Figure (cartoon, rainbow, N blue to C red):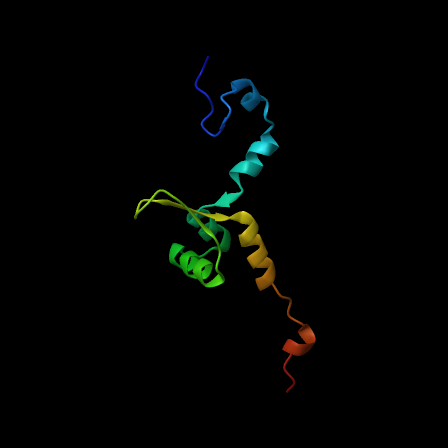
Length: 99
């Protein structure tokens, strides 16, 4: 028997149940949290901009570990909700300048 998959987490000690989990369930679990680097790539900004924006918007930070080397994650659902709040359409009639 080979090594278990690194991304497969089995909290109940049942390898069979873990192996039968379908790919979509695992991908949903893996993508529920975003790292600052993933968020920076998504927004096409620097890591410091991610820190500034997430603090200003009050997004929850999940800290795994302590100190400078602790791992930080953000909830994808909160990021998506903030993006919806910040998205707007420009009305071409208003933005057109009358000369």
